[in-house]
Image (cartoon, rainbow, N blue to C red):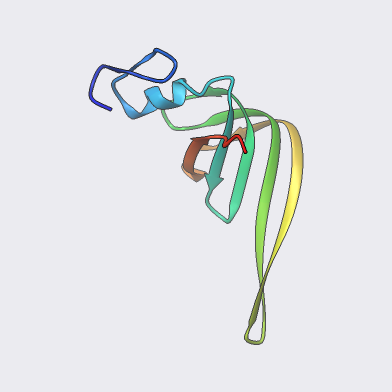
Length: 98
């Protein structure tokens, strides 16, 4: 988007964090370092991309190597509220409605 252009919720977008502001109180998908993914409602964020998420489902991918075979296992955890440190955040995206 060009500087000062109107975003999807009618808010002005002039820098990247403005896009995150438009996702407040929405369900988001967050990809983290260490083969982890989160889905939850974005309650707050700051300039370091520290996030506070509610009603979170965390998916952890575990790669197990046996001889020449690779098996990927997934583990899921649910949390009512979660603080995510910004230096582990790789991507924040609106949750797909499928």
